[in-house]
Image (cartoon, rainbow, N blue to C red; front, top):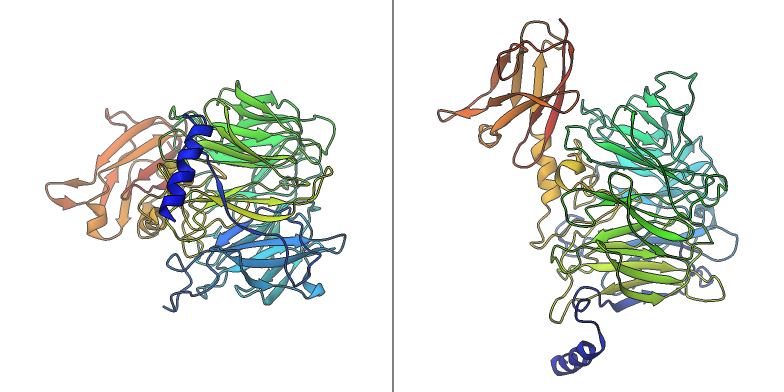
Length: 585
């Protein structure tokens, strides 16, 4: 076998460009093209999920030490989609949900996570012919139907997060929030995360850095209790921040190195970057090939990554005619012609396959699977396939626990071509095999810190933009260590309390954590609302870790700071905990 591989490798070297070899030479590891259960349900138009459904090592836990599995839906005709799961090692069946009462909407995306703290993940999707979610246990058995949600759904999908940091996750669909049992918690009145006719897709982040996660639903942001933080949907509504914008697809990252994230919004053919408070930082920027008037072709969900390895994130968007990468100032870095007449709202992902510091973009249009050089747009590899291209995109994860990333793509017959099913590509041998990756991808709006390696949902989610600063992308994980979960635990074990708050003349800042962790905090920094650092405190001096200190509202030069909102920022071992404090003079 080694001799055969060596001969094949030598042959490939003669055929392939030197620059592309070792980075982009995918080999088909396995494919799922149908099942004896519901054999006509063999078309796949959703973003697949990766997570551990079975206790393979019999240790009583369903986690990173077990083999990953792949979850998806497949359909045939107009009778909804069936939920399926296969083994990440070879694509063999784990379960097929055949009961017609439990069909899902074709093309609507899934989310998965441990929503009830039983140590096993649940799977959630949009129930066919309804405005409800349906939940399944890790073995595919039925769990519950939710209450109704408000926003019409076409190819959208749910998201899972612990919004109020109480240890029990919430499930979000558009602007509607459910508890772990599918019961309605609250429903917003403005943006819902739809772009044209497609969606909804909502995401969650600690936008105001004051504790708890906000729901980012297109042109509106809601606090964890359902109150509106800001909205651009209606100038006559509460907390309106102009100008009015159409609803859209969002992503979150840091574009200016201040303590707050920015929100990327793709809406009706335009790209915007919004500050955390809703003010426009950039836009409108026209997306080539997307339509301002046709709701079928408004532009796909944004992918955020440092495409050119310059330390600043860029934004990738697929339209009907182009895949486009924008710099943070709105200029186009590169674009590539694609064929997306079937929808124009597909997604993409970025990953440094060979860990050489030069990442690759993976995108599928209705005709081709393509891998590009992320910096230049140079085409490294393409393979013919077919798909209706709903809102799906390729997924990167180590799906077989071999220490190397795999690429998952989906297909359905379209445009006279008859590819169908789920395909796993990889490169785990040769001169330059693909690097390791996490063994999980749990939802369409995946952003690394939103889920732990065992499928549990962090009680306190570490801001992804302070560590990875990407969105809809995977992390290289060369040591096979779940650094994300470690960061989440560091955040959960540190509490910063400010008393009184607001204050006028002085306040006490109390740090609650182990002394070992306090010794590794170093400096605690205070920023004003523009992101300018105004004060810093040394938390470990003379061999003693401080438990508390008094701040008199002055900056590092002893000058009184004016009335306003300030952010106290602590950094436990690479994570970040931010607390809002208000000075009233």
